[in-house]
Image (cartoon, rainbow over all chains, first blue to last red; front, side, top):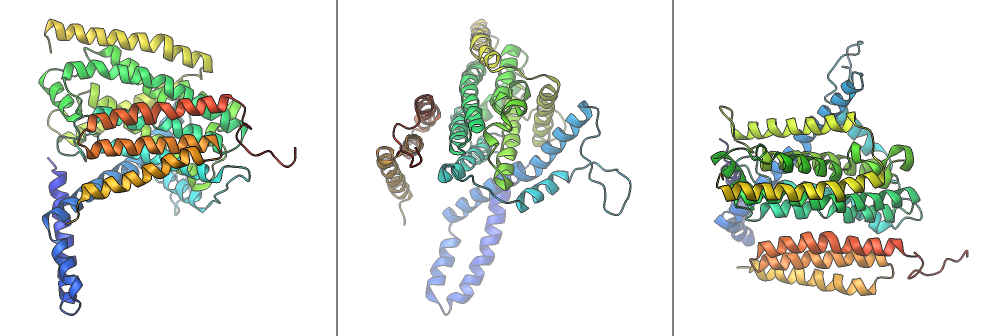
Length: 371
Length: 90
């Protein structure tokens, strides 16, 4: 098993040791450097640095390695679902069209970086810039509280689950701001639809987790997984809550059965229309990060997190979350788009009663004494 | 020894006071809503400093997540020209 904190602490100690020796050497002539070297080798500084390195590892994993795999899975898979080969990046020294296309997304990213960052003339420039920043920050911040294993977690918060849901709840605000600031009727309609939909689906999303909280008796994601190891994966007794959560998270991510905020046939690209260059790329990638966050959340809450035989916990967690991600992609590209009134009807009239019913089921399980 | 609690308290308070002044000073209503969200989130930060993480998280979930969105809906469903300066062309 990997002890992330130990590794980070080791790296920090090693790195700071080198820096301190160099500073100490110069400290012979310049006195303040001596104090700086002493400060760098203190336990508090090293602890802080270890936490920073831990966060860096998580961010690099989530935003680079994981992201490339996710984007590759999605693009390849919907290519196959539409009876195409999907992305293929042919090798430069070969003439034949052959290859997995794993680096295609890197090439697309390079293309987006080269493009001009256009701000519309009548846009509210300041808001236009800050809205993507809010979306990207909140998307990455979710991973602070998601445990990949018992030790592979950045911050083990007491109310980690509520923290995740709270961070996910900030996004509609940024979507509305982005839609308004672009000063374009399509973005405004897209932003309004997006915020209405996200706001509506947050309620079943949160209600569906209540059953899990009841059975586990804790808000801490690590505790929830440990409770599942003691009894059974909560996806089996609470299958109803799992389904509600899955539908709600797909709607929250604006994916295809519920993608009316950016319905291409009506609204160009929804609230993203006016964004160009890497700003568009950032928001677009943040959507994938959020999708993975949703898959990871389902894994933690319903599928037993990192529990599994033989392989290390982190590998199990990643396998399970990728399977959930593939199921989300599968539903996304095989279902037609719903209308706005249908979306809101499903959210308010179907999912919320079902989520309440799942709470009752969980309460009955608890009352009978099975958990 | 720096007192980090005090440092973060002062930083958060400064942000919060400036943001709450900007809520009433901004010319555009959407900007006011944005500054309101900043005020509420920094308030959550101060709850964390007071060692009550649960209230901080609920503060962000309920206030920062829902209230500004409701404000924005209210603003956008009413006429847009209420607070803005009139256009020269009209």
